[in-house]
Image (tube, rainbow, N blue to C red; front, side, top):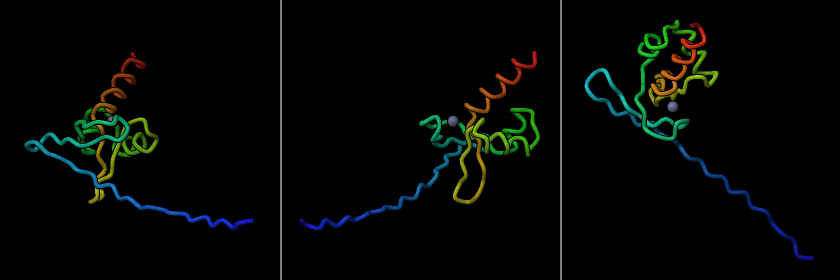
Amino acid sequence: MARTKKILITTESQEHFILRTFGREHAFGYCPKCDRETEMLTVDQAVSLCEVKTAEAVRLAEAGKIHSVETDSGHLLFCKVSATDWEEETRNRNV
Ligand SMILES: [Zn+2]
């Protein structure tokens, strides 16, 4: 019986997050969850939009309720589409 040899090939890929900014207010980047380019919010902008505290916004991002990406420089950015959806859902629940 011929001996077979298994070779495992692993590849490493690094993803770089590219952020494009327009003026000072708006930044656009690729949201992996939406699978398209969306407007990205800073933590402060997300906090204002969702009317939650910073810690809560981070928790929502970690729970995946609001899409988020971390830039190479370590900044956490929120996907505006999902943040808006979350905010609308929460407001409708409370009405
Ligand atoms: Zn998204």
